[in-house]
Image 1 (cartoon, rainbow, N blue to C red):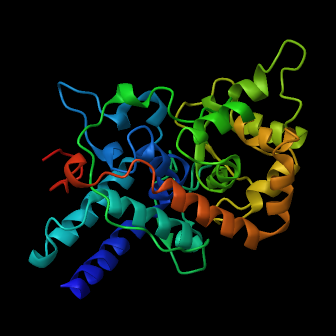
Image 2 (cartoon, helix red, strand yellow):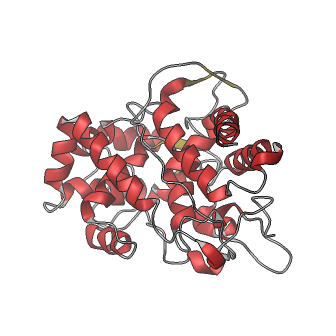
Length: 324
């Protein structure tokens, strides 16, 4: 039975990985963290809204979560439960945690074709892609045994997710509320080495930063001009740009090198370098990919322990998007 479970989980991972061009960003930039906050690592972010209740994933802060990512977790769950010995033995929360790990480990295995938008992971205006094998970021053992959560409300999301304009104190405080250190926060912020952002999330940095400086002075001038070209004032709201302008297809430490060059997309990214308290960590991980990998694995493992449901506090959903 144990062997059958492992085989089915591996098969489910294949389903997940075949969806990564939209799924990767959702997992790394928001889905995994959004799943953990506010209610813990319990797959509450996958639950669909009903006529009587608006679920977490429909909160405005989660608007960029890719539907294909949710669909793939649902398919993975169905693949596992299709085997009688495995039915109702693997939670959606554990599948989501495994998917996050596999995205990190294999995400640079993908290339896009016929791209008409800027983003790697959710090509908002694209219509085709293909994948091939390469190496990705660090892999790690996923701690399993989570139960799925019993509630999911949009109201519970407010104030629980990091915002693009956060300063270091706000970021540190938000992560500390979940038992994560400032170093953990800096490591997990490197999830922005992948994924996309809609132009509106950073428009104030390139057009309306302050009366004296329309462009954020901490932003690299050439990069600011590039962003303005990709995101003109009257831009189509569906347009998105890569979070990492240098290596958008690789999970690596380029994120920190970008910060050193004033190329953090959000204020909450760039502040990790401009604030003297966090700059030494940025400099260290920009220099050593191995040190960053170790720190990221430690941090995401801690993140996966936040708010885990066990016993009567959760169950194993029959369908990930629906409560039993």
